Length: 328
Image 1 (cartoon, rainbow, N blue to C red):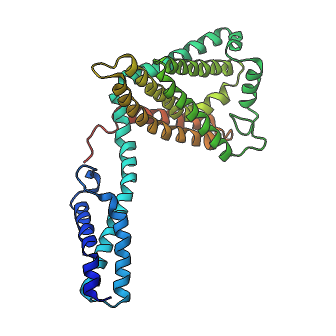
Image 2 (cartoon, rainbow, N blue to C red; image 1 turned 30 degrees about the vertical axis):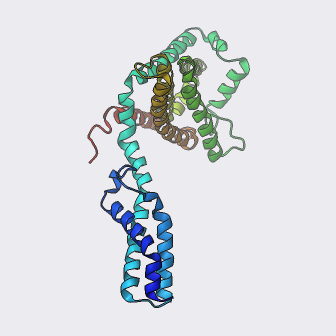
Image 3 (cartoon, rainbow, N blue to C red; image 1 turned 90 degrees about the vertical axis):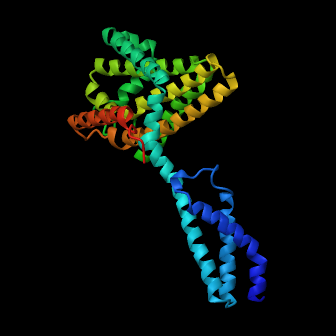
């Protein structure tokens, strides 16, 4: 095929490719959206076709001007595709550094009640069982109590679970599954007019407070509290935020305002899912600490308490101040 025929055959595709490429290059990657960039989804297909055309032009020894033009387009398109892949990473970083804490502060009307629904029952259960140790059997059956005591026995090399054959990686997977299941229940049960989310938060608060008091009563506080103080900053906060997302769902059904309930529920679901993105990240951090760091009984308690203070301070500082300065 002669060069003139080759150019005539593919001129329309090249014009379409050039239009998409120029539109991408005129807009900053972080400011692109579906509204101001037309037909960008066609770029990968056009890019593959252009690579094929370039290979054909080179193998057929077409003119240097045509080969250089096609090669320039290929290089520019490759750069744009690489940038577009980085956009996901940029969005994740931006959400973690600013979007998530901003969202939590904006939704304080459900975040604060969720925290109280978790903390107040925990304090109540702790004080009640600390004063009357027999009340622990109103929350746990005797087998569960014995199992908990064996988990936090000071003689264990690893706390939090019996590790006859389990590895840290296996326990990491267990903690991820267990914690995300709790978070999902807190969120999804909010559809039951908030009552499901309220129950999950209160129940988990009672369990944590009651277990803490029992460990104090049996003298295992020197192993239990150093175990939970580190990862608890991320895990307990994440559960409270998942509960807040559930309360947001229920509130949309109870008080939709001037909107229809379906519209209000869709908006609340969008907010709730965004909160769950951040909650999932926090639970991954918590599971990593719980499996590989908190459970190590060889670490001195002062070290774990110091790290726990740092983690709790960091989480509080993050949600109070991160993202207050608008990103440039």
